[in-house]
Image 1 (cartoon, helix red, strand yellow):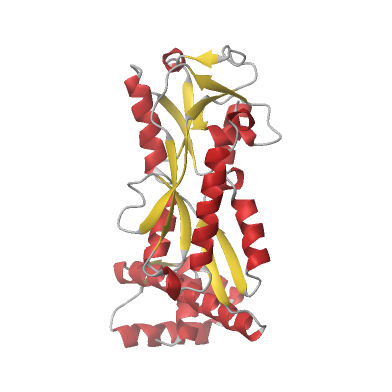
Image 2 (spheres, rainbow, N blue to C red):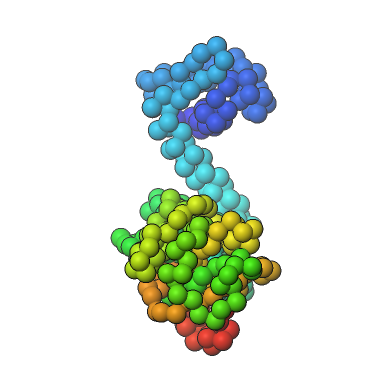
Length: 306
């Protein structure tokens, strides 16, 4: 397929309107319409259902839109790689991460990698765990940090970090200033959780933990980022359970309280696909991550205490 036509299609699929798509592409409508017709003729199937006001994707169009995004993104990444190599770089390493990794040593790892391997162009992309797994399998990223062993299944990897959950409470919550908390005492509260769609592992782990303490959490809000979880709690919109590392988030008015009894830990895994030596810089990132993992384990508990 002609990449120019594929870009035209992608913009029209987003805008669902020939006039808006043509304006965005800085062209008139007739050549845009012609290009879409030619693309449909090449594929021998309609991609849009047209009416007097707008256009809607057919099932074939939906499938092409999904693949077009991947193809065009890959094309842009290839251009960036070529420019990086032309500028003196040895290659490019693409790393996925979740927001909590900002408190789990990622900045330190990035600093070390760039210092020790200046010839590798390091690119970071924030994605949830499921998005990272899909991106690794599709060769869209080379390395990732995901939650839970199940999430990391079928890929190469190792456990990077394990830590307990703690209660995240509003500063004026009735239990905000206790030293230890029985989780069952939160059974009447409304909960803010990390979205089931973004990270099923975290969602299921927290629900299972509550069930083990005799109640089903009243899940009022689901959000896509840990920073949003803490922000919702700060605003008095509910309570939450978060990995202990989130207590390092600063500044915050939320209170983080340990639980009275031990429970299943929150786990972060490093993942990659295939032979690490085939990707420039990947072996180095794996080694740096293993070293940082050991530092996380040896960090004095007082530094991580809430």
